[in-house]
Length: 355
Image (cartoon, rainbow, N blue to C red):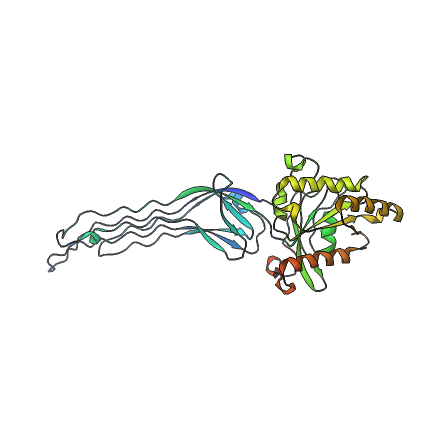
């Protein structure tokens, strides 16, 4: 399945049905009078956040959504049926914007949350509605009101508890694959990860969701490399895990490069709680590890965790540190959300293919 986190969609609600002009004519019934029924309402256009989705790929193949027109009124005071509405089903975490892609309409952060994007037109009155004591036989009716139409933008921001950031080849995908059942693409070249990946980590019988995004390089906020377009997927996280590879020549500079890009992006990322870890320490000796850790501490202002996904060293400690920050931010350990329905029945995450 491809990953798509932004889509442009045209929507139109249904027109209201027209009222009917009709007069009752039955044998042996005198002065039948008007009996034209009202038209039905046009269908609405709704958006709903549902589980089981973590991409907007469906909206690449269908960009137009139109609700049905209300049925016209009929004689014998028969009201037309209401038009059938349409519902756009989107992943939890989807934001809806106006056509300018800046004005926020609704932010769908909870499963089952619904919002009406376009209201259907009201049905027109039939001529029976206009009968008065002085006008016993009106011969006109109202047409139905037109529905609303607009172009909107859908923008997905994945909902996760912790986000992984760092330079390309910092070991983020390896970390995710080690502590969760996610299987992101892993290779020894930059930008192996092209799309965000999600996984559920478990530590001390507690679960939390990790988001891995493509690596950042200097100038990412100006579009260099893959750019910073995927940083929106860690905006909602409660804590960031900043990984710096031990193979970096200057660990301090590697940290400040990514930190600068987070600050340039904004969105509150530079103010989020951050845990720093020196990854891939299995490739260095103790003396080199201490030197890199000291340089990273000087740049970040905190003693980094020393971890190796290959050997498992330090992994438990950093997961516990992440959990503690998440629990503290949530206010109560028991308040961690149950995300089991976002994964397949056999326990595997619904993950995206990285190509």
